[in-house]
Image (cartoon, rainbow, N blue to C red; front, side, top):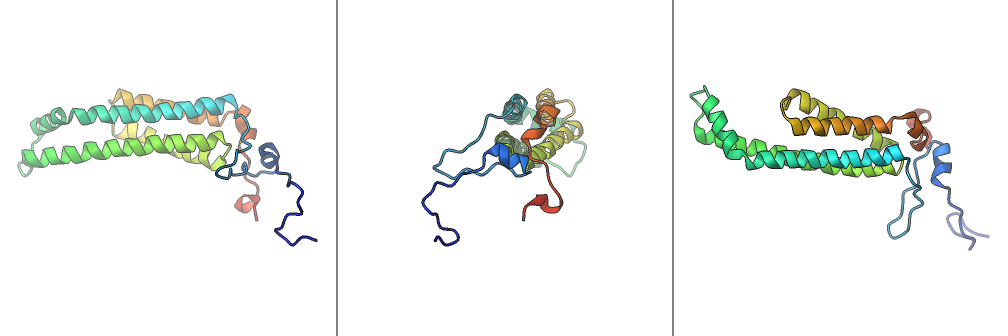
Length: 186
């Protein structure tokens, strides 16, 4: 007789990801060192992943280029400055800080797009939700802060299209539905 938690020597049958999805559960997490039983995601999910990666790369490239134009940005702001309490050095320091902050932020967004895009490829519903929020933030940044920036517009467009692909009816079954309070898991 085996104790709870012990194996009787027979190989334990694991549920497939499709069986887990049918019960409203996410795919079983893979254990490091073991091959996972991840099935092939639907084509729209794969396309969405690559669009998120591309959106992140466009953001990083856009802000990296802006970082190389630091002197031009500083000079333009110095010419536009009407506040006598700000000297040129303060403006240059502020521009440097702002541009580096934007660049680091774009790298963070690119990493989050890639990470949660990958998790969405594995069928994780919460990753789809997080990607939706990230796409909304990217769109708001485009509309409110960089309305004249074509690269940021392209990145926002790619993120919105990728998000729309994750909500197509043909992929609805790939993401497990939330059942009841607390997701149905107890």
